[in-house]
Length: 488
Image 1 (tube, rainbow, N blue to C red):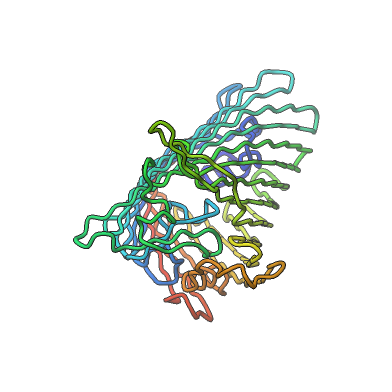
Image 2 (tube, helix red, strand yellow; image 1 turned 45 degrees about the horizontal axis):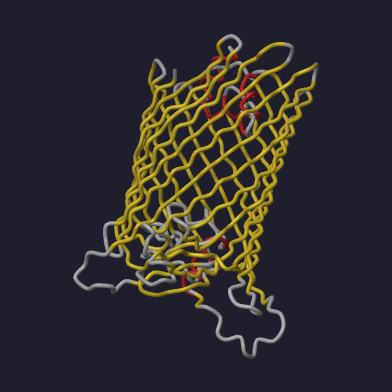
């Protein structure tokens, strides 16, 4: 009966109920015993102008994915793969696949159609080797192709790979674990122009908080057309460690990570950036097997920094070499999050309610003695409920978020002869900041029908509305989702 109830509640719940699955330690996969798999195809349509500066007001995406958790004797494994195709109209803004991933950005200004193809694959395995010991290994891979088909056009290739070995030891009511992770990501932006008017399109290199350089895309300030370098390449390598401790139905997971990356290649490196982060997760669960309560909390802190290198070229015997004479810190940022969630799950419902908070403090230091910063916060409260009525599942969700921001001047000393600070792209700064902090209400509803023998079809819809807007071009955004799947 318990396995049947978990089957009805779906894969997401089965994966979520084991708190070890939320962390790096794949060996903790064996702390549960329920097996379940699913495969589905889906289509999503989005419209509306309550969007960030790099988003599309008219987009759709479709794809397929499958996920599985299986336990066979001493071995437990989980994994899946997916493919997604996205197409958006009237898109400009960031030329990167994820505009917020790096502490800098390259922005273009001509709206056009963009497409994104994403392939992902991941797997985890846990093996119980006896006397309370378990070994685990997790790995994941993602590849993405991004393209814009209107000048200033660009094509991106992104790869992201991670691997995490782990160990677990159980004795009595206690379980202890440790994990190490290695991650490598790389992205290359290649820009081009094939229109009849040569060198007429501008780009903006955002060095943090929308301060930077705006010029023709072939200029040296945006690095899209540099001699000896193909496009704009960026790569990052990260390492992480985490420790876990469980006592009965209480799990604590703490981790630390460090990453370092650079832009450029072949000895020409324009920037060096790094990040350090700590995170803490605490989860507890109680109740009977068919009716469970979960409490989850999480906190994280990230500090990242971007340094701009001072380059020089020297030619000896006809051979030109590039040297790095030094570097200047141009942007630093601290990011903190705090999340709290409660979940109640039984045979007829799965209710989740939570609070999410975000705080960022960024400081632009492009020219001494000037220093300009921004503090931003956002708070979100949400309730999601899923009701099970015979063959039907009724979904409802409600989310409200709000926030604020403030700019400050951290300049030091006299600036009488320092010159003018680099360009601030005020329009984009205002729109992006307002989108992230404006009061917003989001409502969602859906219906899923379990046909027979594990097959199901679902339809979902959502509406989001922003209040008191001055810079964002619209107050509403809509979403519709169609899914067809199979549980096995």
